[in-house]
Image (cartoon, rainbow, N blue to C red; front, top):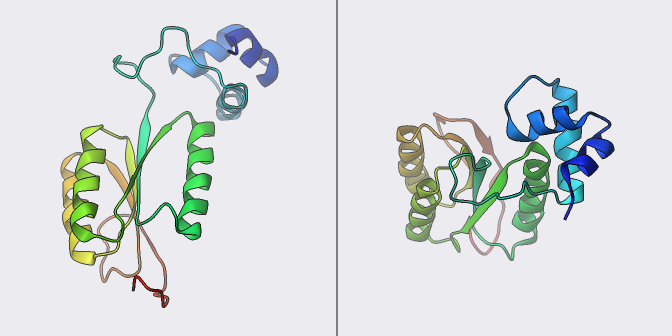
Length: 167
């Protein structure tokens, strides 16, 4: 188990700066925040006495993908998880198995954990619209990855339709 002192040493800062960054309670430059969070992630640092149920829990981002076994989604998920770790966020993962009903249930389950944001890869545009409305009601930042939206109301990454057995 890594110590705060080890994190500070690796990040090249004082113990006080590392503590301020990791506790989010004081000034630190953006560069130093990135250095400290990266050092903490690389060392596997966990604050003493931390628990998921406490009020100061770290922020989490929910990710919905159609299938964990699809190499495209697995690769995307890996990249998302690595970036979130460096940023000090946890990642909640759900998969829909290309089923619109499971998609809607998965988004509802992710929202119950009160994420700071969602990254959704959806398979059904009508389900996507319902999910996005629900996200907006919960004041959750959302990025939606989907093949096509006529007029997206939230930040959207659109991918061209490709032939696959799930299209």
